[in-house]
Structures are given as structure tokens and as C-alpha cells.
Length: 421
Ligand code: NAD
Image 1 (cartoon, rainbow, N blue to C red):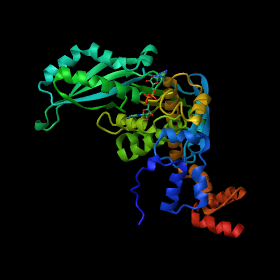
Image 2: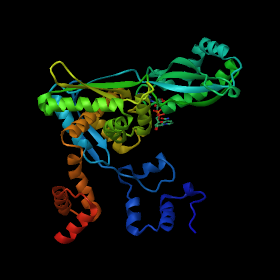
Image 3: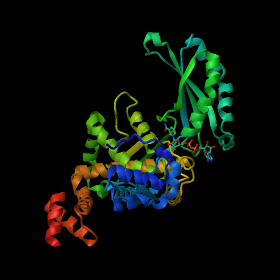
């Protein structure tokens, strides 16, 4: 019987791990060859994560037409879903008519959370923490002299009390360490600082620290973007009206809102992945932010302006970096940052916010005009044709027929392949 209990898999060489997989999953030579081709990442991948047996390439597309704060950008997007890059480019083209996107962002302040439990006297503990603010910041800042030199570092604290505990668990105090992480995403920096600070916190509060980690709900690190879409360009008053109604639907219905926000994250995640940023972190923060009021709400809002044009706005936490993490390790991420030409993490966050807004606009416009499937289907049909076994020019030929017949299905693609061959 095959077992997944493999002692020391991590110690094996890349080749030997593939051998194990070959035996375990019955992989054939062709499959092993695909895994062995490590592409642009090469052997770097082995230093990035554990138990590496290959890389997982994604298509990398470029979204064109983005004019943001008067500057032109070409935007690399890594994503498996058809239509996203085309939709972003098309939305950005329409936004140019009214000057493109206007963006802004707050300081790159991340929150590090330290949970202090078993507190004998919470009132006394809170005042002790506030009294010791200078010392706490000093301890934290000793951990990253480089960040300090760059003008970043721990800047402030917030103290919160959590009272919802069962009485026998005692009260909890949560210290927020507010750290300016400059051009980094900041999780490692902040985690190191929270761990450094915790022994001192235990000493002054008489409590016991438990969790010490960054919060992905980066409410002090927000990026926003706005744009106006001229009604004549986007299809007339009906489209403006439809998009506003679609937005109101999302605002009042979490089922719709999840999909509304997913459309935004299509664009955002694609840029995050292309630049080696932590998309899980941004996703978690975005959805938590969307639910901050206690109700899950859209990350964008859409209104009709005084000229009857469509005005859109997006605001969300965007903890992204242009240094640290995978951004400076992954060779393709480095190239993508060069293509973007962003000088700071804040500029990257603003570009990403603009992409999120563009993506949302494109999805809503497609939904209210013709339904999302029309655009999706022609690209989806190509995937279906490939899965059915089409190669080269045959992919386009089969895809065209599938769309024409409105039968984008693998069984039909296989039938057509047999017929045409
Ligand atoms: P990092 O530690 O790799 O790099 C940050 C360091 O770079 C700073 O400490 C600083 O010393 C140095 N630096 C040099 N130039 C800088 C500049 N201009 N601005 C800022 N710092 C500069 O990376 P990080 O950003 O602290 O952490 C990001 C990584 O942490 C990601 O890979 C992420 O996936 C991971 N992570 C995330 C979580 C989470 O989100 N919950 C938790 C743990 C780890």
C-alpha cells in the first residue's frame, strides 16, 4: 500500500523527490519532464519553499492603457482566468477619456498585534503600557536599524481590551504596535518587533503574552483610486444606470457582494502575483475591511456625477512591497516591477487600486450590457479546445465553431476535432 508518511522528504534532492512522486502517483516520463522544467524560477524555487518538485507557471499578460495620476503604466498580470487582462485594458482605455485614474494612499503603517493574557489588573496594565510607550518603541526599533535609517520603524501604539472572554479566562489586552514599513510588505519586520517587545510587556503588566503577529487588516495602510467614465463612451445612460443598480444590489446583498468583490480581486491578485506579493494577505485584509461595519460591503462605489457620467471609487488596505518577501527573489517579479516602473510600495498600492477599480467597472459593464459569458466564452472556448486535444491553428478553428454554436463543451470539441481531422 502506498503511504504518504515519507520520512525526510525534505532532505531528498529535487530529482529524488520526483522519483518518489513517480512511484507514488504513477507519473509517466512526459509528466516528470514537465515538472523538471522549472522555467524562469530555476533552482531559486528550492530556496523559497519546502519539498519543491517543480514550479507552477501562470500566463503573464500586460494590461495596457492605464493612465494614473497623469503617468502611463503597463501592468503585468499573472492569472489563469481568461478575459481579465483584456477587460482591465479596455476599462483603462475608456477611463483615459476623462483623464484616467486619480489615486492616493496613506503612510505604509502596519499593525503588529500582541495578545496579553492572565492580566491581574487590566486598568493598571493599560496605564503601564501607555506609560512605557517610549521604551516599547525603542525595543521594537532596535530590531531593524536599516528600516529606522530609512525613516521607518515603530511609531506608535494602540491599546485595546477584549472583554468578551469567558470569565474564567480572564481579561485580555491587545497591544497594537504601529510600524512604518516603508517599501516592504512588512509582515516579517512587524512579527520580529512584536516578539521582541513581548518580554517587556509581560514584565510591566504581570500578564502572559500569547500571540505576537502582524494583522492583515491593515486599516492604517489604505490605497484609493477614482475615475470617471463618460456615458457616451461606455454605452449610454442605460449602462450608467445599470452599473449603479448593480452596485446597489451588491451593497444590500452579501451573495452578490462576494462576487462583486471577487471581480475586483481578479485584477488585484493578478498584479500581486506578478510582482511576487502576498495575495493571501491582501485578500484577507480586503474582505475583512469590506466587513468592517459589521455588514459585508462592496470595496467600490459607483455614482452618477453632475454631467450624468459614471464616477467610481475604490478604497482598501493594500499591504504590498517592492522590497522583501518574493518581490526581490523571483526573477520574473523583479522584471515585472521594472515594467511597472513604480518607485515606492505606496505607488504600487495605488496602481493596484486603479486596476481593481478598472476590473470592477469592466465586469459590471459586461454584466449589465450583454452578460459576462459572451466575452468569457471566446477565451474559454480556446481552453476547451486545448483540453479536447486541439493543437496549433486548430485551437482557434475549433474555438470559433464552439462559440458560434454556443456549445463550449469538451465533448463537442472532441467531436469537431475528429470531424475536421
Ligand atoms: P522582509 O523581511 O523580506 O524585508 C523587509 C526588510 O527589508 C526590512 O526589515 C528592512 O530591513 C529591509 N529593507 C531594505 N530596504 C527597505 C525599504 N526601502 N523599505 C522597507 N524595508 C527595507 O519582508 P517583509 O516585507 O517584512 O515580509 C514580507 C513576507 O512576510 C512575505 O513573504 C509574506 O508572505 C510573509 N509573511 C506574511 C504573514 C502575514 O501576512 N500574516 C506572516 C508571516 C510572513
